[in-house]
Image (cartoon, rainbow, N blue to C red):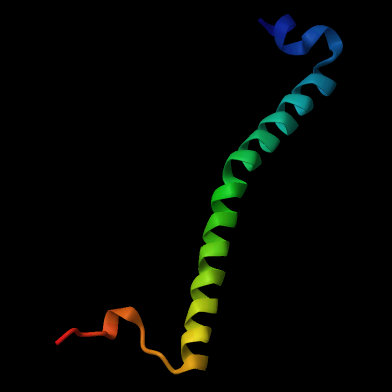
Length: 65
């Protein structure tokens, strides 16, 4: 087992390569969710600013008679 973990003397190169691979893989999995959340927050802000600029109320405040 120790010989396998030593990777034939190349462990100093192999294990960091695995670490970088898994770090990139994790980032590729997390980044789209973070971006989606940021874009949704920016869009809500833009919509709110546009409503204030136009003087309209939010759709939740409208009451039909």
